[in-house]
Image (cartoon, rainbow, N blue to C red; front, side):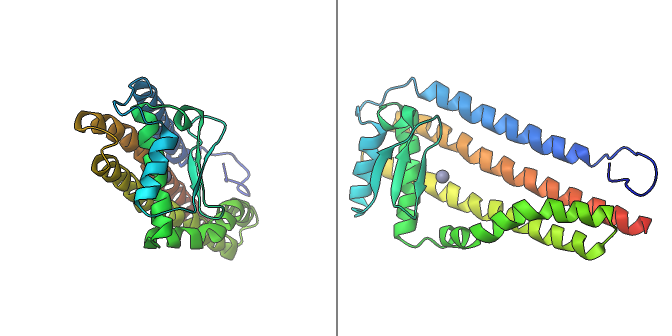
Length: 236
Ligand SMILES: [Zn+2]
């Protein structure tokens, strides 16, 4: 592929980079699903549901303007800083499982990051628009650059894609920090006991791995763009 203009097809081995990235992401999402499935069957001794645990954590952090709401779907939990809504999914909102309480506490971690002006979260919010533009425009521009042999288009495509990679990179500390806040709060507020914490930790670690996989996958894609652009330059 992208042997355009040469009059023959040649195998593009850089596809392997995409395949590796895809396999990493699949493995990580499979792992988070199986870990969640395992710990959604273990009920917490306190009997607090995800929603109740979230309310307790937010209150103890002095946060009174965040609304805890129920959202459809599985693993769709998130905190929206614009609306200050902490959305918990079907299996989290009303469940008292270790998985539910762990995920709810993680989303509270994001709400606390927002309330306290945690730097990496602010940086991430600031680069969202640029990262979205980068993710959408980088490929069309890059492919156009390859087809029409326009070097500046290749460069712009690579720079735009780098913004999307940067977003994934900044996401990592934000997610890991939210999970460590979650575990600290679950422990200090006595929501989970010592032996229960390890279950919640496993769920959150599996979730963190999906962000590592996403970052690795986008770095591999960036590498592929660089290799394709480099090959193009040599062919010119
Ligand atoms: Zn998160």
